[in-house]
Amino acid sequence: DAGVTQSPTHLIKTRGQQVTLRCSPKSGHDTVSWYQQALGQGPQFIFQYYEEEERQRGNFPDRFSGHQFPNYSSELNVNALLLGDSALYLCASSLGGNPSDTQYFGPGTRLTVL
Amino acid sequence: AQKVTQAQTEISVVEKEDVTLDCVYETRDTTYYLFWYKQPPSGELVFLIRRNSFDEQNEISGRYSWNFQKSTSSFNFTITASQVVDSAVYFCALSEASLTGGGNKLTFGTGTQLKVEL
Image 1 (cartoon, rainbow over the protein chains, first blue to last red):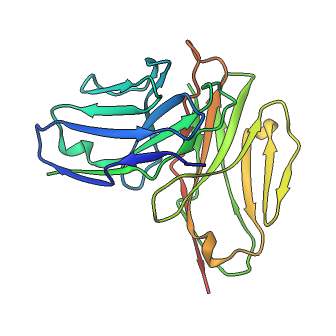
Image 2: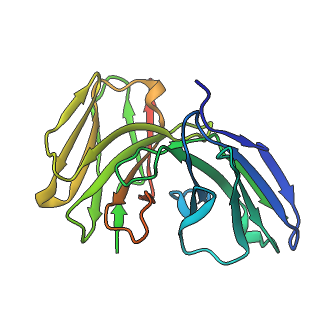
């Protein structure tokens, strides 16, 4: 049973560039969430996708956008990168996305902005 | 607004000691869910347990046990006879049932770094 997968593992970008991160949910899951985890902090919720639409959004600027595909995989796009965007980006999936549903996390993408 | 507080930034113990990680939460909801996750150095968050707000029965699973008390808004986690492999960052998280539009957004605490030494 394949778990949540993310690509790439590591990424180095410069300020002002754009980046796309990818996530494949756990088999059978239809809901994907993205979190940003700065060094030494807990994960912060960016947004959640369900049925190819953004269902919930955290307190992140419009530079952060996403997409969910018919096969439930998802992309996170960040435009006009800032130094402060350097973080571990975690993708999580669940079935249905109800508050009681457990989210399972991928290994993350480490983004470094120079 | 929801909030999760993990006041212990770092805990160091010697192997075989028992250790308790504290979690205090704030929510206005009457229905909510609490989670514990473990994050080893590899970075992936590993799910440990989920409890709902209407079930205060405490649970034991092997060396792990959880103490949920609504009266004090706490959901503490204890590792009995700790092992070096338990070394990781542990996160407590909250999901509320009243979220507009649905969804299961998690609000995390800042984590507790547990170091188990020989």
